[in-house]
Every structure is written in C-alpha cells, then in structure tokens.
Length: 82
Image (cartoon, rainbow, N blue to C red; front, top):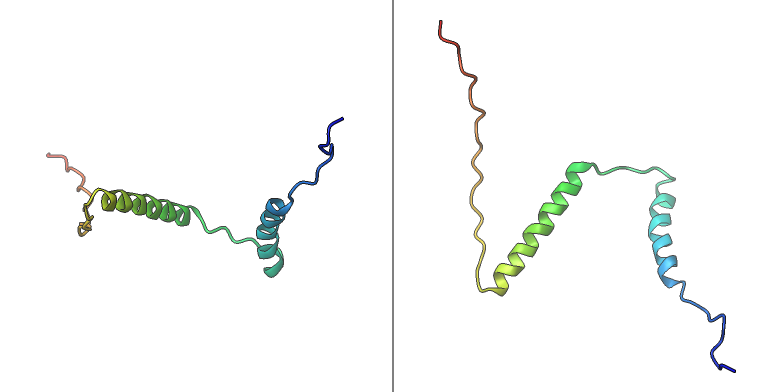
C-alpha cells in the first residue's frame, strides 16, 4: 500500500493573489473600469523594446545615444499643369 495520500492539499496562493489583483481595483472604484486605451499599451510596448535593446547594448559594451526626432512634413499634393 502506498504511503502517499490520494487527495493531497494544493496551493491556492497563486489563485488568491490573482483574484486579489482583479478584485481590489473594482472594489476601490465601485466597479467602474477605465480603459487606458491603445496608445497607453503601445507606449508601454515601445518602452519595453527600448529597455531590452539598451540592456543588450550594455552587455555588449555599447551605449545607445538618442538622436533628435525630425518632424517630416507631409508632401504637398502635386498640382496639375494646365
């Protein structure tokens, strides 16, 4: 006969933590959800990519130097010659 118990207790900490992160904001804002929008997520993604690139460059002994962003003007529409 096996000494191992058949119905061993399992950890519920992971589930409890996840539920807490979902429940607390809803509780503090009385159920109102504010979507940060696509621009917020795009900005966070760009920051993540930049941080990874900086870390790789630092590990290889390089340093990233930001360059000024030049605003490109929209090309003017061609005019028809008469």
